[in-house]
Amino acid sequence: MVGPSRPQFVLFGSSIVQLSFGNGGWGSSLSEIYSRRADVILRGYYGWNSRRAVQVLDDIFPKDASVQPSLVIVYFGGNDSMGPHSSGLGPHVPLPEYVENMKKIALHLKSLSKTLRIIFLSCPPVDEVRVRSNASAYFSELVRTNELCKKYSDACITLCKELDIKVVDLYSALQTISDWETACFTDGIHLSAEGSKIVVKEILKVLREATEWSPSLHWKSMPVEFAEDSPYDLVAADGKRTLNPSTWNFHWESQWD
Image (cartoon, rainbow, N blue to C red; front, side, top):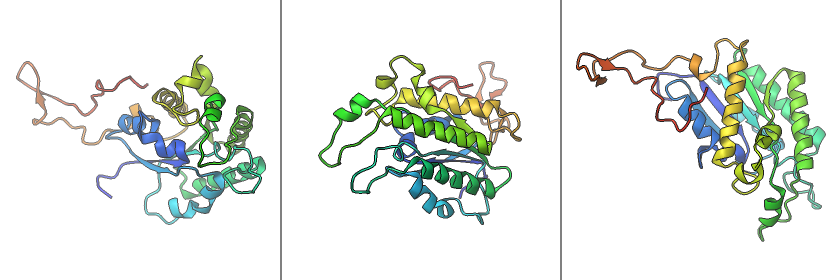
């Protein structure tokens, strides 16, 4: 642990989380947006479902930790929603069990701290054509359909309403652009840079509109680390003062609100 301590934002989930720091991913964008404000911590596990997540909750989020996260963003559902394999093996989790697992995750996180905030991401759609065309000799048939994705997404959203947890409806959000099948995914399943931008905007919207959360976790409302003026900053054109760069963000590809 390096200091000074900052609020911790933990991203917890399967491959859409693990891969979120590459390819212009949503995790890397959040890390940039919250630079000097919060530490974005990656806890993503390729191929995992909600069943495996429940098994390690105490390891990843121990109740006796001296510091608890300020925000946890949770995503499971894409692997759970895959069609079951005839062998009984594989990532598929029946819908009722998926809901119960997500509830266990939510209640565990709620128990960690009264000030810990939670956002769930619901199951996104897939590009079914590309998923079928990307068949690999290493795997049995991958049964991923938008009918299944929608059922698991809706179930996640319903659960979040029951538990008063913020949720991003990824199934709907990613389909707001006309060419979403090709624009939002790298392989029909995992997010492209364009898809990740949508995820970031939706997360920031939740954080901006959560006015009941005190303190606010929207980046514009959070204090900036070492924001004081310094005579060692770059000198202004008039040669009489320095320019404080602590809140400069003009280097961002786009302006996040």
